Each structure stands twice: as structure tokens, then as C-alpha cells.
Image 1: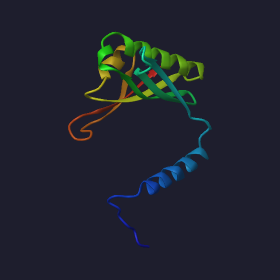
Image 2: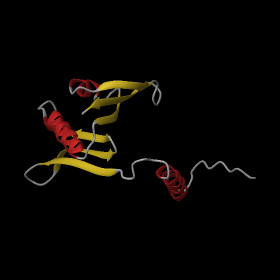
Image 3: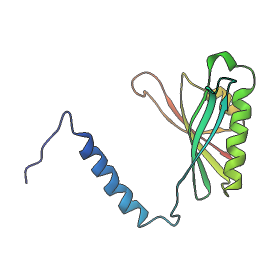
Image 4: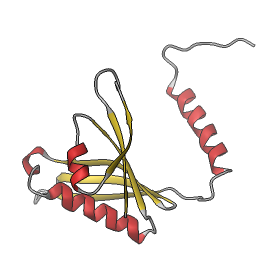
Length: 137
């Protein structure tokens, strides 16, 4: 066997490997769907000024992103946005939500919304921390 270390692998190789892991995982999951979900807020010009993207997966809502334009921060838009995506998750049967946030991002915001730190990845990628947070819906 000749193992080859690739400093700049082709995207097609990365995609191939990810697909093979997905195929193997789906053979063992008791849930067969991971469905996308999003909530957006647009201004009068039709531009997105806040939004959240998540996935429902069995009992879990996996919150991938939550963003509020700088002009709207501190005006309760993020809390309302989070509430809307959580409610949509509940409609899909989710009873828990999971997210990741970095030390310079939104941990205090999520804690105010009832999220608890589940675990911490220290020194990520060097001097920050990544927080894994969850909440029962």
C-alpha cells in the first residue's frame, strides 16, 4: 500500500470521503431524515437583515447559524429570531436544540435564552474557545 499525504487535496476527494461516511452513518441511524429549516427577516428592499439556519434530526434541532445585522443588534431581534426557529423545530417534533458558538460570539446571548454549556473545546483554534450548548425545548 502506498499512502499519499495531500497538502492541497481536490475538493472532489473531500466530497467523496464525506459522502462515504454519510452512507455508512445512514445505515445505522434510527432516523432517516435531516431536514433543513430557516427563518429570515427582510427589510423593505427585500434584503435579508437577520436569519437563522438549522436542521431537524429526530428529537434534535441543530442550530447552524444565527445572524443579525449590526444595525439591529441589541433590539431583541436575535431573541425573536431564535424563538421562531425553536418553535418551528417543535412543530417538527424536536424536543432539544444543539448549537456551537465561539468565545467572541454569542455565549451570553444564548445563556439568556436558557441554553447551557454542554462542553468546551479550549484553545480553539489557538487562543479562543468553542462552546457546545444545548437546551430542552
